[in-house]
Amino acid sequence: MTCGSSGDSLKGAKVKRMPTWKRLFIHLIKLLSVLINTGLFIGCCRLFYMDSIITMAVFQVELAIYIAYSFVLAILMKTYNAFDSNMSSVNEQFFSAMLSAAILNALTYVIMGVGVLKIPNPIPLLGLTACQCIVNAVWVPLCKCFGNVLYRQNSKTVIVYQTDADLQKLYDIKKYKHLFSVQKYIKNPQSIQSLIKELEGFDVVFVAGIHATLRNGIAKYCVENDICAYIEPRIGDVLLAGAKHTRAFSIPTLRVTKASPAPEYLFIKRAFDIFASALAIILTSPIMAAVAIAIKLDDGGPIFYKQKRLTKDRKEFKILKFRSMCVDAEKDGVARLTSKNDARITRVGRIIRKCRADELPQLFNILFGSMTIVGPRPERKEIAEQYEETIPAFRLRLQVKAGLTGYAQIFGRYNTHPYDKLQMDLMYINKMSIVEDLFLMMATVKILFSGKSAEGVEDGEITADTRVNEDVKESA
Image (cartoon, rainbow, N blue to C red):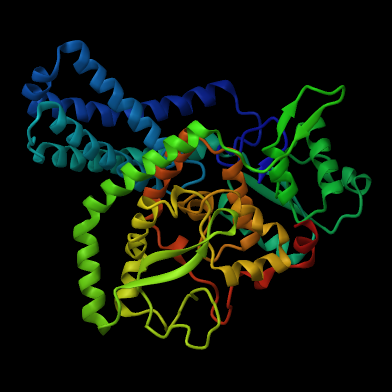
């Protein structure tokens, strides 16, 4: 959803205009979070790695190392939402902070080894991570308490929706009662004129399932009256969001075209795919060997599973995965997604699917060029054709090469509705860049530890498309 007023996004959730002193105090808390962890790192280096640092450079470069550590830590903590005390639980914030510190400490160890051309003692850095764990266990709950006080607004909120299914999409609002005080529900409004009086006096409007004309009217009204509007977009909205502004005509125009990434971006992306996949194959080879042995010992069947998938311009390729289901999983010939309690999944399969180890062989797909690291998830031809019957625009995902990770894989789930996955994929296609790819790759690390994104469709459903309603069909 997008904010239709001058306010911030839902992630920031500053629904009302926050006083300057509050904003400064929040930034101070974020800065202290970084400085506390960096201070522990400086102490570790001074106590245990001083000889190594001195051999690398003089004091100025030592200082640069500390600044670089704090800068990268801040980026990682922001990427993993470690600063998001208004929208995340204490456990989520603590996990994000420690994931950021652990990744950076591991990276620092590798860089230090390369810099001094020898293997440093890993014990101090492990001790550093343990100390950061203890300190963050105290600091994060304290930040959460401050955050709850600073962000608490209970903004008067109204929800405008078309059908009960659209209202169900907004169930997450209940988690944020300190931000949104829902006081009115408006179902199936007929015109903006009838809505104006209903919206008076509210701070926030959530809009889901409303047709384009009325949706645009709500957005304009909210901007004019300084109301924050969170609006569920449609495919056309997402395409226009990525359009290019042109100045060649006497009227404002937006140029909408098929995705055409710059050649230099494609070259860098492919070079990085080769380097990163080759390195990942080497580093994960012990894990892949262990998984292969476990699968073979479990039922004696094939280790790998090959399946035809679609990539750019509907080109077919064979995706490679570790087999997580019984050998005759689709003996009836019907293509279906995995359900929550799928009896076809083997004992080993449940474990490797939960930790995503079944996806590791796709690194070979990336290395040989049939996939990329960041891009829309490749679908089976049969399932894609089913989706395209109700959502013709679903084929727009095939403007670029299929990828291992992306918006839909990170922010969606296995059972996320295909219409929503399509929008997330188009959002990525709109803003493809090296920076965006790096951000998504970093964000992927966090979801490896989350079981929710791997949830299957409901038992009895063949695909995730059984919930498509008429308004989706029309808007697609």
